[in-house]
Image 1 (cartoon, rainbow, N blue to C red):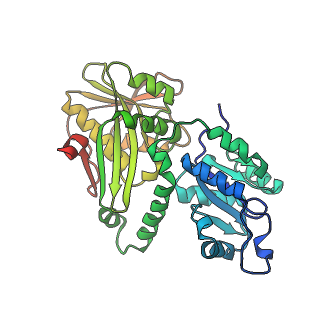
Image 2: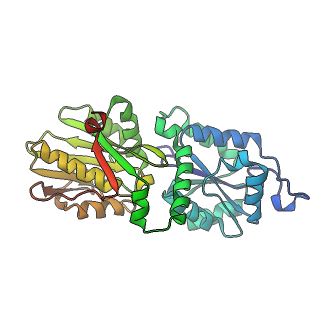
Image 3: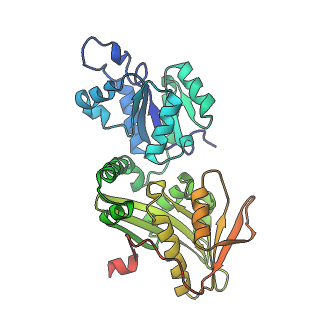
Length: 353
């Protein structure tokens, strides 16, 4: 197993890492010149869907100087943290702002002290010295890059715009979500969407029911009686791309079983996970199924998914096929839960009609 599996964002120190000098000690307002090899590394990672941020123990004004003096450098970073706070706290804030687990971060820092502080307080975070960056880049060589991966950095920038608009919006949270005009389109996965489904299985943790490996997902998707469904989402700010994937097993009569339900953490808190699940349940009933099942492997990260499944009326019925997993089920008779009213949900066949 690659030690960089699961990495979604690389956090860069500034002084001694991104550039050679110390920004607050320069005689003018001009910042030190970034090391070309570091900028090249950031761009190479972005091309493979890996985000970059900053955690620097320095004066907050350095970030303002970066934005005004070197905007082409500043735009490479999402949710940057420049302050005198501990690096571990900066990393926690970055993870929160990006909506990812702190364990999905890597810190690149020239200071052994700063790396040790993060390792002690955030043991799930991997740390590197600047000279170790080639090893990091090599870990991503040869990996399949989906369209969503190539667009990930720009989509996170769009997400920053969404968040800023939400903070300025005068009204309730539900009124803001209605104003966003979110639209979810669900359908059987097309061949070009399958790589993204495999990526969601591997990368997402908060909204992942079973942690099914991409290899196993590919194997099951190709077997008789199985089908992969995807969910695409857009809003007034732009397209999210494929944000959800579900593997459906229809080999048992009158039962729809879902060995994997996975959604991007970028849509957490917007009703998309519930809408995807509820529409799958409705589609199962339309197809004649009498029972709906989901395989769940509880983890420290997927509490949100567990709550969703319980709210949808699914209850544990038997042990799951893998260790520490269970099968949750509910009948499809009676009223089924409905998506939130602010989210427009349709099926791909309807959207194309």
